[in-house]
Image (cartoon, rainbow, N blue to C red; front, side, top):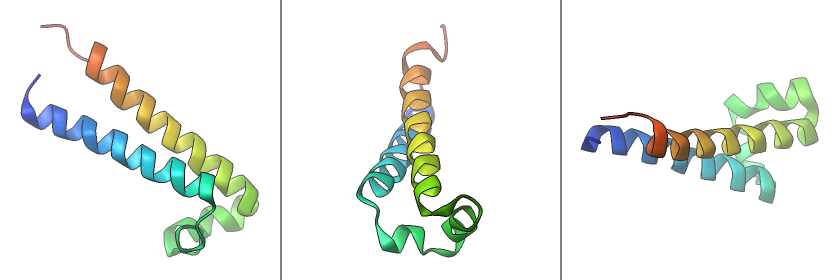
Length: 73
C-alpha cells in the first residue's frame, strides 16, 4: 500500500475518532459550530450526537477495513 493511501486511511480514522469522541463527550463547541448546527436543528441535540457518533464509527470502520481488505496486490 502506498504512502498516500495510508495517509488517506489515517485521515479517515482520525476524523472518525474526532467525531465519535466529540459526540460521546457532548462538546458544546462542536455542536454549536455552523456546520453541525444544521444537523442539531434537524435532529435535536441528542439526535445529532447519535448521528455524529455513528458517522465517526463508520469512518473508523471504513478506514480499518480498507486498510486490511482494500486492495489485493
